[in-house]
Amino acid sequence: MAELDTSGGGHKKKGPGVKKGKKLSTRVDLTPMVDLGFLLITFFIFTTTMSQPTALKLLMPDDKVKPEEQNKAKESGALTILMGADNHVYYYEGQLKPDASNFLSASYNGENSIRDVIMKKKAYVRSIAQDPNDPEHDLVVVIKPSQYCTYKNVIDILDEMSINVVKKFALVDIFETEEQLIKISDDSAKPSSN
Amino acid sequence: MGRAKLPRKSTNIDMTAMCDVAFLLLSFFILTTKFKPSEAIAVTTPSSVSSKVAPNKDFVLVTIDKDGKVFLTIDDKEKRTLVVNSLNASKNLGVDVAKFKAADFIGASFGELNSFLSVAPENRKGNALPGIPCKDTTNNEMIDWMRAVSEAYAGEKMDLLLKGDNLAKYPSFKGVMTAFKRNDIQKFQMVTNPENAPVGSELYKKSMNGEKQENN
Image (cartoon, rainbow over all chains, first blue to last red):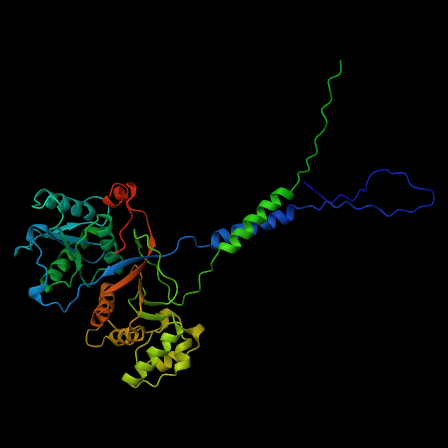
């Protein structure tokens, strides 16, 4: 390692009677300085925030539009996603049947994920499309968060819309009957998870 | 037949070059680092694939913490004055304008606003504050706040941000959305952490083909 050299400039002839001061080397040991430098670098690397937060835009539908002016969703192209407690997610296609036989359960990721459900629906809408120029015209996803779900669940589903490039989706208030259905399903799922 | 003697090399290394690099990197990191302002309200935001960077000045931010408490931040100090003046007039609150202007965020109901503002700013911590009531449909004070804010921004572009915690329950979010809707604010942005589109999804294929994400 570099160290402070104090040995002087070697043997040089000295004039008679001339006292010469010891010549000090200008070499300085830089090791501690480098140590300090890298210590500070590590500190700044860890404290720096490289990723800026991003913003997800959301356009809300206007509530004041009269019912007769609202767009009616075709039953074949409608998919309703409902979010329950403990990251449970449910869906049904078209209209909810009175016996709730088409009320199905999905998950946010992994097997039977809501993404697969959306993609399947999308493929189905494309296969029955009338207008070849706009095959996804009839696809409408209705998002109904229940009072038990979290903010993250809502964002995840909205994010699914941009991941799967669903152009038409709406965040809609849930019906009482659907909320009860979610509650029953959530409760029935609980004992198995415990 | 003596072998040629190898000159013994010194173990001393010149540290100058390494020192140069170290300090170059150091100055880079010092200059690029931006310290996170210490936030009184701890919020962990969810992730989304959105690639649009959130605005960081002149925004109106509604924060929902993990207990569903709602806080309001108005970045522009001039607008704060407008908001408090209009609320003082309509609700007869008698709030000190200077104190309101100095407050970084608001987290109390109208009735408790004066006592909230009398607390020293460093003692206003999110977990001890009541938040703005909005869960109850009959007493949604966010509606009045948002009305005052949208009046203050009348004719101007408003960057409305919503920053919610992962664990916040939906009713608070719904209360905030109701407040937005009642004041004809249909457009807002939600602060999220960036995340890549999942491999194989439609958006992933799109970005692979070089298509830009739509920002509408």
